Image (tube, rainbow, N blue to C red; front, side, top):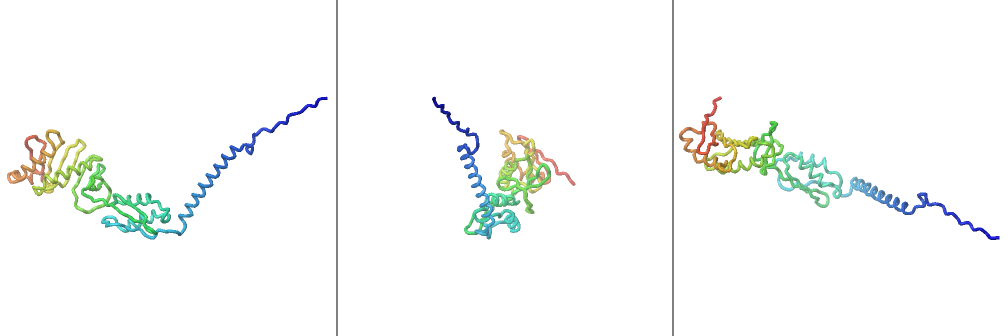
Length: 257
């Protein structure tokens, strides 16, 4: 009688422990998470350890507007960590928020100090904003907020026009120099019309810049007639000089208060 052989049925590999590829993937993921966790914990511990503490901030160069109290306050607010772990970008940003600071450079100085170099704004004019608030303009035509008691020319104009106003101011200052006069106030309207007040009180209405009749031409013509007109009609009392005419100008007497 023949014997019947039965084939053994192997169990299906459906369980997690029976899938080596999946197990290896999970193990690799756990290893990566563990390394990241250890790195984070190590960073926190390293920041709190008393090793390589920062002892001082050395300010390079001379600062005229930024006070020692402001520097100390910004230092206390940002010096977190030690010599190796401190975030220099955060420290730099904190100092650049100070009113008179245009740019800050921060570097490590071995073994326990930071070097701080501050570039201060140099105010050349006051800027009157549309909302009535006053700002300052530096030599780059940048508007910034700070307090100053200095006597400065007054600028006004549409938002973003400070560099243009500053450029015209410097141009007109050179043209007027032979007369011993200089601009005291510069105003650019929303229609791009210019008005200049001189330091003797005379107001020049220059109008808009035109290709055939430029502002430079109008200002040059004013300087050519300034002294003769002053001798004949007392231009200093004229109040307003309208230079918008192609071949001449008109005078309006100053209003008596």
